[in-house]
Length: 162
Image (tube, rainbow, N blue to C red; front, side, top):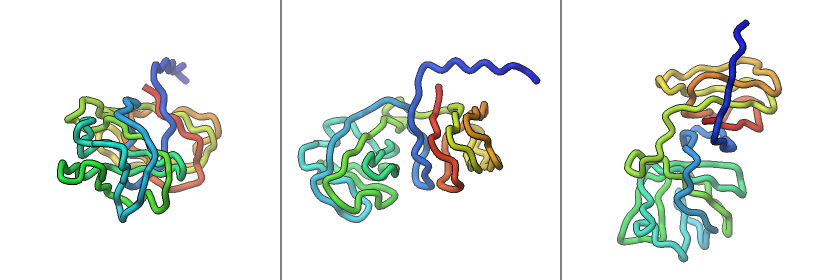
């Protein structure tokens, strides 16, 4: 078997999600929600358009380990982002917004995965193929260029590596 050398320079904890791709680890902003609304991130202390937050950016709810994609940023309501999933059902909750929009130049074009706790791992590859790796062992690397990890299976402690 060939010896695969993986020498990444960047890493990010992966939140398994049916709602969002794995973001490239370029933080646009972070904060704490001040209210909650259906499929919204509300932070009265932020002006999201002024911070150059764009549709397509990825939001991590660090309190719940969930993620979503921003679908609308409106200058008319600059403290509210519309998301493709309802990941903020209570407040206050901490969040991180990653520059994953092609408009922001931070799009993930593919990363390899380290799987700390094994199990089945369903992914979307950089070539847009959706496949499931069955019975991935603890402490394994998946040397396939991946853009999304779906929210299935018992696998956990997954890191994206670039």
